[in-house]
Length: 325
Image (cartoon, rainbow, N blue to C red; front, side, top):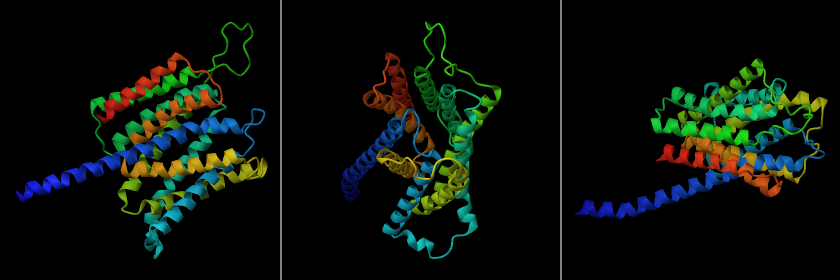
């Protein structure tokens, strides 16, 4: 009788706790989707005569520095500084350098690849990182996915390809003289580089998730280790560009600072997802953000949406149902 009363009393409490957790995750993921989706439209708003007026490399460094600063403040406010009384061992800290190196490599690959393909081809082919992340997630983390989940990830990949293809500027077929520079092209070397980019992107996400989950440290302290390396490595990679082109903070506006704040917050939220969720959830966030990006571009920039836009919306919704049911 006592057991039945205890179960009955704890059941509403457990249900309430689960409901609160679902609301928290919904708010977190919704905020991430909004920030991801608003990134490209905000960058477009900063352009002057079609050119970005600030140094993109310095912007990346500022984003990493903002994440580092927020992580440090969070660590102090939550009382996690006790873990820093003794200097951390090299074996403990060294794994956090790997994600920074991988992300810095990919940032440079994006620029380097433009010489071997047009931006539209890159936009379409970069969706292959959904497949590479899923494969590495299964192989490296030992996660077995059900056939329905593999089907869901396939739908997610197709949704990204469809959305990217619908946004291609293929030119006017009735135009007698095609405009120079809009022709789709990709070389064999470009195809190889985009495959490397997708594999590195997936590896960075999977490796970061493995490190965050394997060490029983406060997330704010783990973020501190991550972004110390992030600031250092991105600072080194941007130093040559800053010296030869624009000054570090040249062209910064209110919108640029908003981009930095948003991307810093998004990076910290992504750490929460990788620590307590999975890298697959990250893929769904990125896919949903494509739709938010299109809607914001329609509202803010006046870009036209076509009925084809509804196809990736349906595919992403179906993929989420199949994966999480």
